[in-house]
Image 1 (cartoon, rainbow, N blue to C red):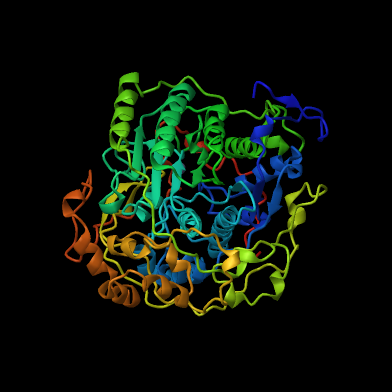
Image 2 (spheres, protein in one colour):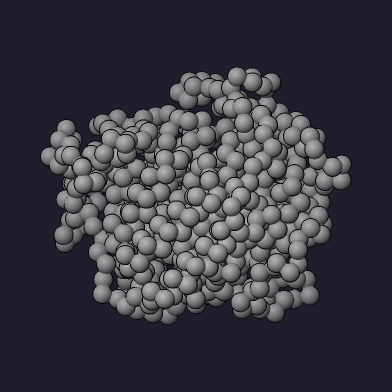
Length: 621
Ligand SMILES: [Zn+2]
């Protein structure tokens, strides 16, 4: 940045500085203006409007000139079930505030209703979030861009069959599954103040994905992410946890982040990176407890970008809305190769950026509980795990079964396509935002892109046994969480309609799907669940023993997963709660977060809901 030069052909002289030429990347940015219309409910700290506020900054800073802007097709139910169970997704699709009373049992089963409430348009909200991440991943895989950005994504707590921590559908897992179709090894990095438990759990037993989470640990939601949790089975050492204490500063965070990430990249040699940019690690976040400035947070993005690998940038937490929108706008600029100027341009949310109207989030004077000794200890422990020489697993190379989108031009034929043949297609509407479209409200009615959802949903859902334990909710209340996957499996061996005949020209020579059957046996999610039935069985038939193939077909993966799991490596739950005879946790459902009494210490109750600048337009109104 020392060599940065001023860029002048943008609204307002010096609105941003161009970074060095080698920083120039092709950026795809995903935004759906509908996202700002959803509302978790009065007083809920999660405010989707922050994404619209961020977008308004992005547009008014002139970043539309530096990247392609898309509205992704919302993810379909079928696509969501590449990770989640059919039953759970069906429930999310069906539930609404009006019929919620009829689903009391399901609400408890799926942990929906308290911290993760039922609100109007819930399923559509999940679809938009997941659609952007899947589409971003698909465009990265197809070399349509170098960096894909989806601030509506990053919902890292969602589990296979359970909502958690304001997250319902895990767009990150779905995006990574898309990347795994083409990439041998995907590195996931999480800088949200909370542990990235949902993503870690999904890939806990596979070496195809390495997860690295930096988070507050100790009396904090979700209660997982200990230093010693490093993965199990084939996934051992491919999960890294960096548990931190309150008040970490820019300098300390930078040191440990760059050390650990650099080591992880050297050790694992990923071919793509997913960075969850949860902004609740910023100083002053309503639910967070770190002390990062905007620059400190953004330095992580800048650092990861320098590896020059396909990069998926996602949102996540971030509960002080005006700080979150600032950080993500600034980080969008970094992705696009510019450094946004301090002066916030006039935009429709301008009044929320007072009194300074500057693009900054400053550190405060809170005490840093992370001593040098503590951080050194953590670094040593991580290095100890990552010292083997041959750590980058290779997978047997095979052609990727072609999907309809693999050789199509993005901007053509979308509407002529049979939706049922697009089961895994993440085509966008390819609508590049025009220079004049500075207001996201003008996005409305661009239409014709509400997705058709008449698929016959896949059957054969796998009801894996799950146990739970009690931990803190994001807002400090008790809540249920799921234990490590004992026999988590990729579900569904029936993925609907088959794909047209393959054109070998259209697929890369080397791809990484052959490991899939093994990951079934150890319980990790599979990239192959994205495939049409015929293609998938082709893959399985190569080098998979008959018993396993039968398991895959029948969905009886619990048994296999349990049998192959080395029991000694099961992580020890730090605060186990009694289990009922059925194996279910004794769950104490807390009052909804809205209760002022459970706000984090140090937060004024009056702060909650203080930032609701958006005109709340409930879906359906
Ligand atoms: Zn968070």
